[in-house]
Structure formats: C-alpha cells, structure tokens
Length: 591
Image (cartoon, rainbow, N blue to C red):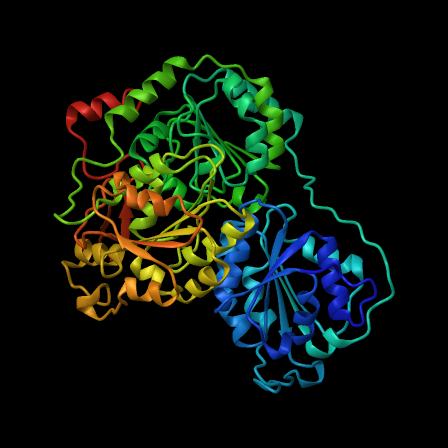
C-alpha cells in the first residue's frame, strides 16, 4: 500500500481517496472488468487482499470490522456474479447489525437494461435490486456524487444500528474526471439516548430488585466494555451475555452468570427464568435469545430492553415492560455509576446452580476413538490466552457447543454470525479477524460440512501466512441435520452424511496441497507437547478433530409436532433431558 495520490486523475481514484479519509485501510476483492478503474485506484491506497470467492470477501470484511482492530475494511466486487455471490455475506451482516461496505461495479450507463429487457450489458444484473432487502442503503451511481453525499452514504453503515451499505458504480462513472475538491464532515455518533426519566425508572427498579440480571448484547462495544469493567464490579450487578456479547466480560468474574439462549447454558436459562428484573442492553431479544416459546421469557421479571432500533422494541415478542430506544454504550455509562446493589445472596445461589449443572451434560455419549466436542472446548478454553481471537463457526455442533462451553477470558475477541447461521462462514471470518489483529493467534473451529463450502480460502490463508489454527470437527456430514432427521423423522436420512450422498476430501491431502501442515487430534491432545508446539507457532495449521457421527448434544430445547403439522418448543428453562427431581428442586428455588 502506498500513499494516496494528491491529484486523482479520475473519479474512481477520488472516491478511493475519500475512503482513505474515512479510515479505510483494507480492501477484500475478486478482480473483474467492471471494477477495473476502482481496482486501479485501490491498488495504491489500501492493503488489497484478493480472495477466491466474493462471499469470503464480504465475510472477511464483516469480521475485520467487528473485531475492532486498527483500520476499517470494505469489499469490492464486479458486476453480475460478483454481486450475487456477496449477497449471502450481506445477509449475515444485515441480521447481525454489522458494518459491511460493498463497492460494486456495473456496466456502462448506456448499456443498462431498460424497458423490461433482462440484460443488455455483459454480466449485467440489477445489483441494487438484489442488495436492497439486506442493506441500509443500496444505490447505483450513473454519475459522480459530491464528497459530502458520499460520506453520508458510507457513514450510514456504522451510524445508529449498523448494517451493509451497497454502492454500485457504472464503469463510465468510474472513469470520468474527478469532481472539484471539497470538504466533508464525518459523523459516526448516535443521537438516540435514554431520557433521564427512563434512566431513573431503571435505577429504581434495580434498587428494589432481589434477583436482577443485566443481559449484555453485542450492541455494547468492546471499547465500552473495557471502560466499564470497574463500574460493573462496583455496582454489584449480576451479568449475563448474549452470544454476540460473550467477550464483554471474563467468565471468571464473580458477577458473571452465563449465556442464556436456545443453545445456551442450562444454568443461565434457569436463572433468567428466576430473575425479577431483566435489563437487556444492546440485544434485539430475537427468538434464539428468548426461545421460540417467547411468551415464557422473563416469566417472573420486569423486562427492560435498550436497543437502538425502535422496530425491535415494538415487534411484539418477547413481552417488554419498559422499551428504551437508545445507544447501548451511553446507557450503561449512565446507569452503572448510579447503582450499588446488595445481591450477594442471589449471586451465591446462581453459582450453586452453575455448580449443580455441568456444561457437559451427563447424558452425552461419545463413542470410542472420538473426541467429545464438549471436552474439546473445555480444553481449548484452558489453553487460550486473553490475547487470542476465537472464531467458532455459525451453525451445527461446532457452534452450539462453543456457546455452551467456552469460558472466555477478557481481552479475547470472539465472533460468530448466528443470525443467518450459514455454513461456510468460519474461514472467511477468521481471515478478516486475523488481519484486523496482526500477530494475534486466531482459533477457527468449524464442522467438516461447513468448512467444505468455503475451503477454497485456504489459499488466502496460505498466501498470507496467517496464524490461524483451523480445527475441523470431522463427523462425515451435517451433524445437526442428521440429528433432526433422527429425532423427528425416525432416522429417514438424506443428504446429511457420506452414506447418504455427501462427499468430503482427505483433509490432510487438501491442507498439504496449500502447504499447510495438519495433525489428527485424540482425547489427550491438550497435553500433547507436539500439538502445543504447533499451537504456539506463527504458522497456519490444521487439526482434524474426529467427532462421533452419533454424538449427542444435550442439553437443548426440544420441540414437538402438534396437530396440524406445526412445531411447539419448550421454554428456555425447560431444556432436555429432564433433571432428576432433587436437582430440579435445588436449581428452581425461585421459579
């Protein structure tokens, strides 16, 4: 990367200069003819990372920005398949409320299809039409726009509730002369804050509470989490996190009570059901967080939700007694210094519940010769340092077990994309997160089925020698789909494993073809000094983790088919398998 040109010769160069002013440092892309001018401008202004497939570019950008490292990243794709390929990544960032700027090419403005014609220009497709449903803004530029308008457009992606921004430039627009030099003001702050009256209601509710819970979501920034650690401790407030908020507090913090979720920790789910006040901050309280039986969420509590998006506050599920539209960071900064609670009895009881309910349920079964995914994550949690980046994949057992078992250390960066829950997200995400934090070790954990969907990006890992430690849960298929077909359809398996039509490579040969070494782990891997040596190296490395195809995943929320073919789920606090009566009585004291 070299410094930006002082006098751009065309609009594409001027536009990339503006991106430099906005703090962008990295461009992930797949080259194409309809972005040739943009690429020429980006070449001398950014660290340009070519990837093999556009979806990986989008995922890498999402995780790069979410990892909160130095700089910002954007994706650049050509017209047609470049745009259609990145839509999955835009969908994931849209659902997770994360910044993702996509600069796309388009055919020359005079070649655009009109009057009902499907296509006129080569590779032409309506990029704006495809991107609009999963973008805060999607625009096509047939002529240059001035600097302030461009700044305002790009800033939409990080203002208020973040999300993707899609800007499509016709090829002739890219090559036109630059506009007259002007200035622009960058604003990336939200004006939405809780009112004094709303804040006072929350303070009084907490002061009168016996069993409160502060549920911290991904809308609370890592920077703010760093700044409020002392305030959390001094307030005495018991804290839980959503999955996206996992790394905002250390698992060993005495006030930390776990991660409630449909695939969360049983103890946390039970404690949430026994709380009398729930303050949910920076979480949209979607159905994964509340359970599909959302009517039971916070059944004994006064529920307060703080979110930047009014539509999430008034969507009708779950019941919210006090919705507050405001910035999550500002809310916590205003709230915590004003509460000093005496909740030691509640916290002590919560720790008793956690002690009574092991993260690896006694009902789980792992066959001989296989590694328990629960034991794996427990070992990984012990080995990982506060400096590590951890990227669990976005679906299947490799994700759900991580949600239940990982014991995070404050300072770690932990990211997944669970809203879309798309297979194949892990590798692209690990690439982006690793590049956002150069030199920090990055752990990627993904199932073999998901990894196969984007395995081409091993090339990107190898070329850039990224210190990513790749753990593949190898169970010869889609474990979660296999279990669904077993539990609900009597084992009528189809397309879920190698016996029903799927195919997988020899993982060792695949990694070797990219110049990346591998090893197969056994149950004692965490104490194997040869394995530890590879973990401590600065090189990428692959680890094949043999997972029992018949591995059970308890506890979990079970559903049942009701009359008419519909499904009905148990509430969060009623995970399966059922607890022994004496244990159930012990952990439901306030239920």
